[in-house]
Length: 292
Length: 248
Image 1 (tube, rainbow over the protein chains, first blue to last red):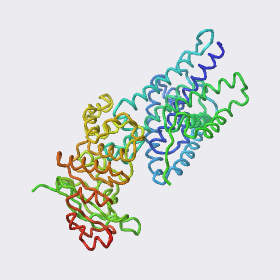
Image 2 (cartoon, rainbow over the protein chains, first blue to last red; image 1 turned 60 degrees about the vertical axis):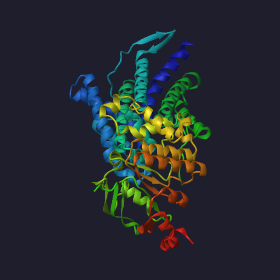
Image 3 (cartoon, rainbow over the protein chains, first blue to last red; image 1 turned 45 degrees about the horizontal axis):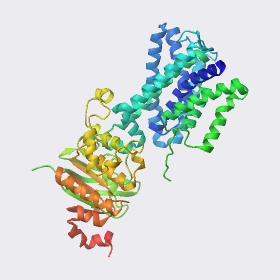
């Protein structure tokens, strides 16, 4: 029982970070109707911004985190929208999706070129202690990651549902032409979505990199799993992305512990195939009509 | 002399080699209900899109209550009191009827800070409920807009267009696909709103009975240009209109 609890909590902690990244996929999908295949690299990059701040600029960690968050929001939010999305989106969603694949390669290779291919240690945000919960030995870092990630999701959900700006963002995502007619500045709402995505990527990066170390290739697996989590949960629903992330995190840990660690990498893909066959809109998603 | 509610001057719009709107000019008086009719592809919706800044016209000018608005974005026109309904269904399907109507009015209230920290309904729930009742949708107040019937969504669309208290509303085929009972109700509501608030309407419609009984003046477009203008009776008897559109 204690092992089960341990595996569950650890899975939820990892899954909550997958969820943050997956929510980014849904935000970009809802605002720009595109899949950002550089999302994993968006999570990899902020960790290196922190390392540059602490090692090159000799900033204290707390300040480095704030600077890295701000730089990420500007680079991966504003610049990504202005330099990649806006010029290419008029040509259609597919060219933009391909452009994000190119961007992923560019970001990955740039970090490798300028910072090296070796994994870099990343300062932990929380004490590396363990707690004994009902006999289960649980890492304090896991607990903190879970609490912080869920708190971020709660704040984001409250923002989207309980503020006028959040409701305008939802309206702009559901029907941009009508939202514009009603006086909603749709361009601004789309920018907000990109800014939030940048912030989510940075926060996910700060939480997960102490566990996996900072490496140029971190985004490959993370981006893929978060993409699958978003599809499994429902690509057009934030709560779906949350559920998908948590589900994959937990199932991954359960499989590795009780079945075999050998095929754990295949589990998200199996889950993806099953969901697409049984419920294509995702567990909590809604089907979207398409005019032909 | 009061400026017209809407003044359209020499608007043209070309798509490739197709001239969708060809040098169209007209005025709409304040409080008037103007009909805009014409065969499919005659440029009516394109003209609406040019007026509202959703399509940039190739040339010409648009004035709303005397103010030049050419080149303005639709969201800016909304703040000048211009509303629109769409030919296609135009609600927010994953929000309740009440939230749809509140959202339609909220951009005209409050500051930047109140958008983040103010009441989520911008204090508009009571007004929204009144508007929902006006269109007799109160029994559907908490239903998701996407679950409503086509006709009910058309009524909701109209309620949303009126929620911000616009001085001018462009209605794009409000009767399209609506059953006869709902249609009579919609027409009666539009006439009542016009009489009570003096709101100006420009109505694109293919349903001749609806448009002839609702509008005081009608403009007929064919191949992007105005071919006739007059009262419903004058339009009915205009040979050019009969040939181009109404049929023998």
